[in-house]
Image (cartoon, rainbow, N blue to C red; front, top):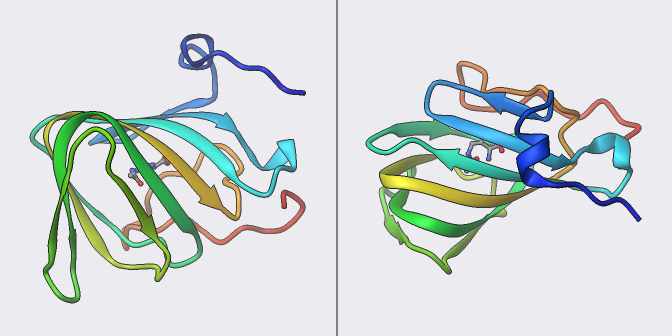
Length: 131
Ligand code: 9YT
């Protein structure tokens, strides 16, 4: 069994920051679980274009308020505590935070640790060994 603490992980290399968000990566590819698990904080008032071409992501809202907009059809989904969305079709989307949001995120395949979004809003594909 692996046990980790969010607040300790936030003070370690498991914490990755980008312009609009912070991601504390509690489970990563080298844990060989087949997924990675992150607690992500999205800054209030931001809009982030995202396109996980190489990953499936499930996102569960713990705290805050925002919306996710699918780019292809411009459908707006409100995100409040208790809402989950699954990017099962590698959907291009915009993530907007009206208030700071705390999200639990699961990625498959697992991230390896230091990924941030490329110019297209994606993370690079997994290189194997972690799933
Ligand atoms: C919801 C989302 O994808 N936010 C960007 C950060 C990502 N969740 C991560 O790397 O933890």
